[in-house]
Length: 125
Image (cartoon, rainbow, N blue to C red; front, side, top):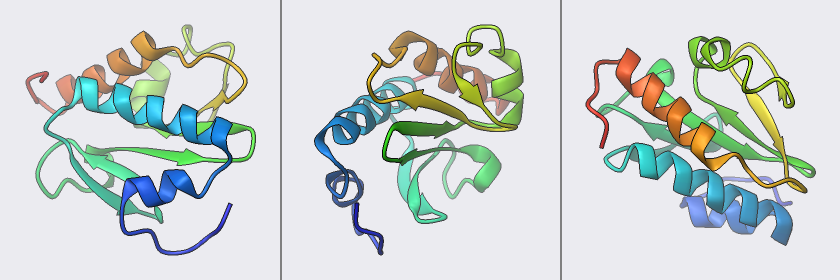
């Protein structure tokens, strides 16, 4: 994986091994399925999806690729709300790690993004 400044999410995704690329593409697809109007940007050097125009960090869903997992950064409230369903995954205060060798829980990811949108008072797309 090369580190640097990315101009597009595709540039970012293509900097990873094929298995990570596939997981990131699926993760992005889940985010955009729930939030089709999200504005794609970069925050902290990783893809971020602003749920409202010019949304700040707590109004974004972010994702990142790593060697053996992909990370989703929805918001600490979202992680807490879905804690039981996320029990098999490594979580942090506002993040969850999905191993690339396992199928992503697409429905759960979509519901997590929808939950954050509802918290922000955004109608689901």
